Image 1: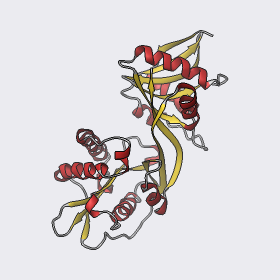
Image 2 (image 1 turned 135 degrees about the horizontal axis):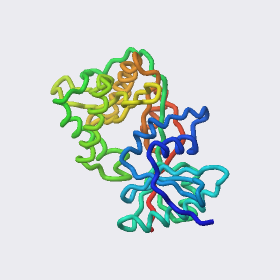
Image 3 (image 1 turned 90 degrees about the horizontal axis):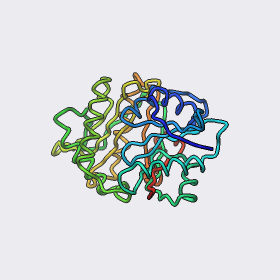
Image 4 (image 1 turned 120 degrees about the horizontal axis):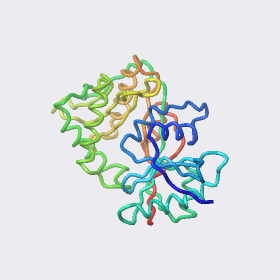
Length: 290
């Protein structure tokens, strides 16, 4: 077989990925959401003669969103050719593989000596009306522009002393960019009010942050908790649980389901399960040295 690679139109790629990637059990396809995920990525189809047998995105040294088209099913062979193409076209030797399903993780670690950086999953639960109060000596409030710098600092301190620091060191500039993006998205949909800050009565300082809202073009108007962070000195007081339940309550008037992402192995999974979140399929980020 002679494989070759062609640049793919993003709209067509989004449709192909939505149909041929590993779907949920009810096959609820949403390529509009996929378009939002790949809007800044370079998309490629893998062709055998003139027939599409698979695809991937490759931007910089970041490779993700792999799929195969039946009847082709040899994912090991496809990865061999994709990794060779990426190695020949990336700057530097390290290639970062993102959003890799369990099946491909085994292929990459066993067959190509790729190293696992972390494994994550999406979790979700129905929203509902909940009567919830903050812990004693604390109060709820909705974030505004004046809170942004303290929110960034709170998230940074929480990550620096939390589970994520075992995988990578937090970068304040990256946190700032992420918070700004969520502010912009949730302001656009007028859903930033779903977010919850917990502040301390004595000093009015932020003790905990729960940034939540609805992204533009979200499937079925699902809401998302983007960030849950509690400053180290305020942990084990019930702050994280109370502010998440408060955000679930506020989302319930317009959003049927709320989602979040978590690293597998993070103790926070236990809290999320406790308040009713259900874990979906796992996906991993890996490093491959070309």
